[in-house]
Length: 509
Image (cartoon, rainbow, N blue to C red; front, side, top):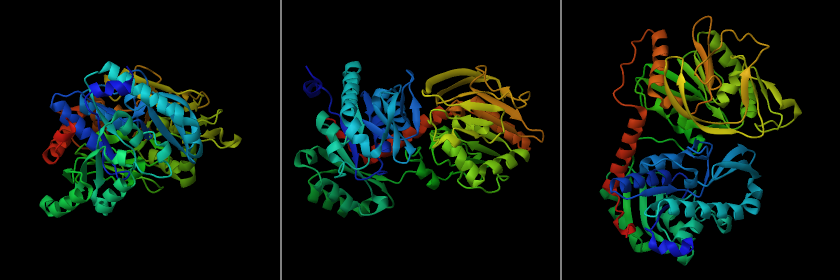
């Protein structure tokens, strides 16, 4: 019996579509996953195709979007690349790396993507669905769409919205963001552009991010239901708990909630920034104010600077030089500044970057070997294949503690023998995972390949206490709960808020 025949025996999948990008699909799926988990169902998240440089590595070393990993945490299960079988990682100039079932299989231009990758993409989506159902026969898929499901120039080649909805005969929810305005036109326009058999799959509408008195929208709710003959199953109020945005451009609008913080952190907003969820633990520290830096200015007001991961390390290092940020970072270091580089940030802190296969943003021969910022005596060479794996190690600095995280990077980094490397020391027992160096005037320059390093509570606390000591602030007291416990609390609060305002009963039949 094939998958389509078996679907009649499965629990009905729920699919969340949106009237636009940013309507709230990811958080809605996350909330529904936790609501169903708490109802003793077996939810599993799924997004056929995602475009994001904010990635996660599963326990088999497969890459997937962080948003689906977060949704898996909401389900109480381990993330797996089958939950996001196609991941497109933008490299700039309308070029993306193509990830199928966690493995990099090539690059494509936007123009050629649908011509070259549509058929293999649909095959890998169906393969993932078959695998999930085989491993979890009693599960209920909670599926996230992408963007709008009715982009008419792309709909015939859309891999991740209505094609999946029809294939799985899913009960679909249409989410719209009232904060943007034009909510009635968004809903009616989206539904009018659907084919009759597609519109029949829409079983409910959610009005997201409503501010003010919910009762004031009763007439609007009645009008939508009479016009569409589809029930409004939820009006979700504006929520304060924040989650990482999928689009890094949203970081420019993201502001730390703690205005009376004692420590000020600056994160360089690289053009090709990746894995910005690395910094969620810092965003949730009440003693810390996080700001994003996108142009050169005096950095002396920051207690430490983070140079984050990059999808195009050579291109981003050239950006740092052209904007003067490289010089600003060197000056900051010479003035007792503290810097942490993660992955591509570690590589850029070194002396040289070599890109013989043009993998990291080099456009020509002159860019194949360039100088780094030069704050650590390290050189990096990029190869054709990248490393993806989960990490379990032990730190040596700023304290001894167990460390968990993951690696996603191209390139091999080693000590630069042309530079004085006597003062550089390993951060971890696994000597290739990171290094640090103390400045003559005080302050440290550190770099690591470990994504998720700040999720390690003891390590994060000790690093923050190192900064606090230099500011003559008292050390942080031993915390009572970890960041991962707090993340669980945020997911639970999100689910509780949705549950107050959302009626899923009709979709579960």
